[in-house]
Image (cartoon, rainbow, N blue to C red; front, top):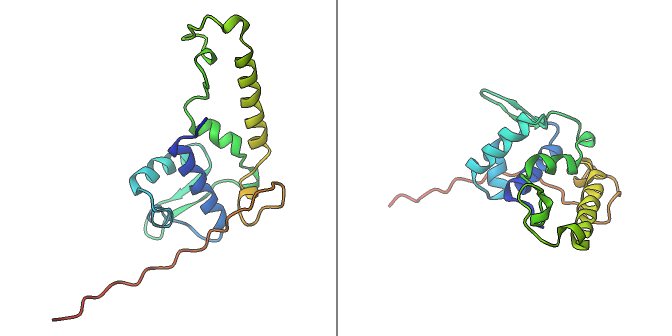
Length: 159
């Protein structure tokens, strides 16, 4: 199984916003920091705002911030909303299943159990757990996202 780029970007945006709760962050800042397309991020941000994860502040000095506490945002919940489907194999969709093994297949049961375990694990993680402010609830190291520094403008010496 592989998550889509959309889900990857959604998690990156939420983690970045959680790392900077004291201020608004901008799409341009996010795009520059992660080195990804501003237009892709705009679609992700619109989805996250519509789903109640981000609050968008318009106008001069506007930007984005978490709409909820990071501790209340479950990673499994986010992924269920950003991924289109979790049909690991054909038989996961009863409407399109043409596999003759389906009635007696043990593989499908194992894959369903694996998918359930995947979400059970991610439902136990919050956005806080994935950021520097998170506790030691997971065994992996979190990545602290620094505040990006402005790049100095390059000047061309006069000839």
